[in-house]
Image 1 (tube, rainbow over the protein chains, first blue to last red):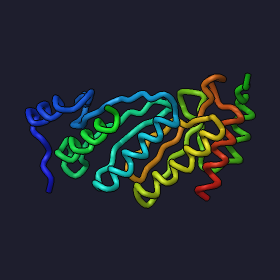
Image 2 (image 1 turned 45 degrees about the vertical axis):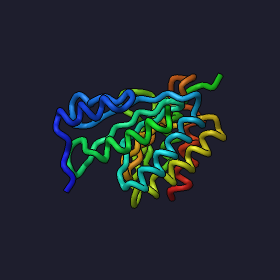
Image 3 (image 1 turned 90 degrees about the vertical axis):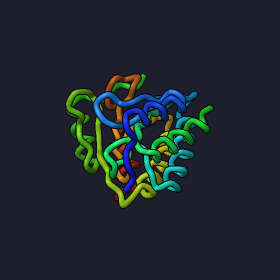
Image 4 (image 1 turned 45 degrees about the horizontal axis):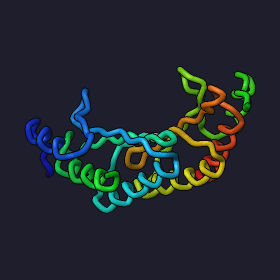
Amino acid sequence: MIQKLTTEERAAQIAQLHGWQAVADRDAIQRKFEFADFNEAFGFMTRVAIKAQEMDHHPEWFNVYSKVEITLATHEADGVTGRDIELAGFIDSITA
Amino acid sequence: MIQKLTTEERAAQIAQLHGWQAVADRDAIQRKFEFADFNEAFGFMTRVAIKAQEMDHHPEWFNVYSKVEITLATHEADGVTGRDIELAGFIDSITA
């Protein structure tokens, strides 16, 4: 069973990422993205989807046109785990 | 300039669709979908994305794992238009 990060661990890990923030009312992290257009936004989502499926760890996400908002948490741990940090790191790596 | 549907027109058009409902607090229509898993959900989203790009009319949507929630409205008309009904009809056709 994967354990959720402590508050200190989570803060330290978020500091290593780019633009991710703790969600106010739940144990999750979030980042908002804006692309040039829908083609670019959905292309990005497709890359994340393939990685998520490979990891068997999926995002919660909202898209409208060029905007994508991603929330990461680990359902079975009821909070943020190393899996979320790993997926966030991948997402950062393709949006650098 | 595309005109939004009247309340009567919108109700008549929604009745022709499958499972779409008027959103309570704005002039938009919404439908929720549940698939077998993420692969199926994102495959569905990809088909909708390609159609949306072809129509140059894009959804607002939320996905988590096997669930997809789609909201349709036409920004420039500030409400539901024939374009939303057309895209909803396509979405219905691939989920029949």
